[in-house]
Length: 167
Image (tube, rainbow, N blue to C red; front, side, top):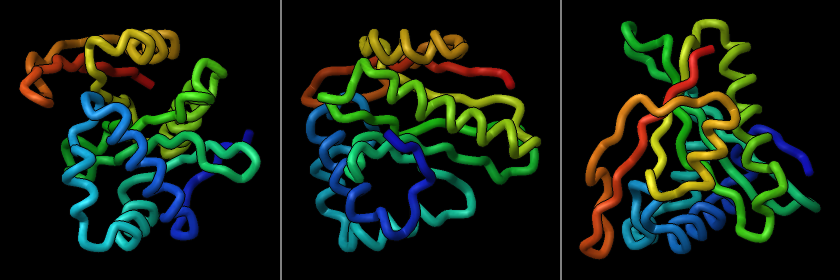
């Protein structure tokens, strides 16, 4: 397995994996699958996302197939430049419980540390996603709050744990 920064050339594979994540786990993401497929030019949008100056997206590859993704967003507001946020974490089902998600997260944390100005990384995770919460805690993230009814899907509300790790 190889973990690397995704670029413009990975836009199509990234888009397909993102759609899979939204379709199979609609309760875990703020964007719905239905909303995503209405995107006018999804590959161009993915290219823009993967080449942004304010984020880095990492991909895990097995036999040249993209099977996992995570993005770290860097805040640009002067008073919040010390913070970053992890978003869009996903690993294909057949590759879970093999440490791939953990390696993606650690790569993002390592990159934030190298940046020098990042002091903390925040993330949100659906509270009922016990395995994800456990994974984040095993790396050192701590819950500092819960947003009740943070997401609503098919008439059902989902709480989100607000988590942070201090570097």
